[in-house]
Image (cartoon, rainbow, N blue to C red; front, top):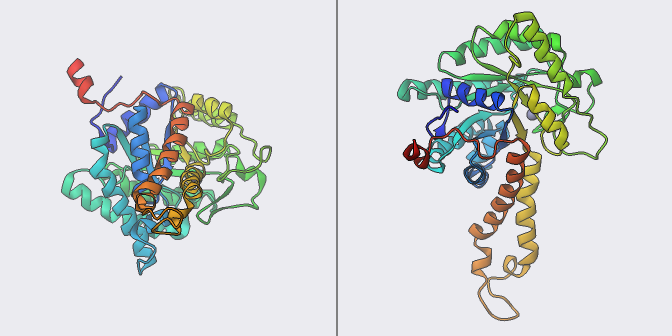
Length: 361
Ligand SMILES: [Zn+2]
């Protein structure tokens, strides 16, 4: 098994990590973060599970990182995402695992957001020899396929120069996430067409590294059982078409599973056979955070209303200290991620070369 230095991985190291996932038929959870509490919970969960992990933010998650009161909202989306990335760079190595840094959905109107982040990546590359982020997503799946692929090609040309990777989307993920996505979409758009995947492979393969968010009935959000029909065989068919046409090895495409929250475990497991290396999880970790904080508040209501307990006259400071109740949210996020590392079979498989390993070698 290859080993990597712990910390944020980019370029060749990212491809090494991804290949290990696909060869080992496991995937990494990609968790959407909104602040240091969620970032740290993800790092802690990954370290405890000895798994590598993907940390990503959406444009509005980035803006939240900068602060809701930040005056210019476009600048907030950019600078907040940069702040998130810098926070992760400072800490990831200390947690002893490998971290992929990524940004989530950017539709047509958010292309300028990704372009602005690219300026930060280029500046970082110039200074340190590595980009700030490992990859960005450009989700032009709502547009015409030719427009989608030509924009992605242009972006990838820019990214490849600084060892970055792109995630594209073909077909539409159902549900809605941060205003991206749609409820009333044509049903077959919810399933990626293998011919579209072939087209993407043909256009992008020689330019740089790319991954594909393929739609196989997956949706953002958690809905009543029965509303979602996952069909992982669509992934298999896309892989097979590219493999046959270009005479490649098995599973030539690096596939991403969006909308992992609430998905049936056996469908998750099946998808791991067809080149899925990344599964996005957002809704379930959002709920986990709320659940932990909510339970704490309900159990300690007096401390959220009185600095001195009116019944016994004791100070309640130890209970309303944000470090206590925010921690309750972190702990339930970690619990939910413990489950994700098992579902995705990445538990115990970190490639990070830690002290113990190097001494043993
Ligand atoms: Zn998504």
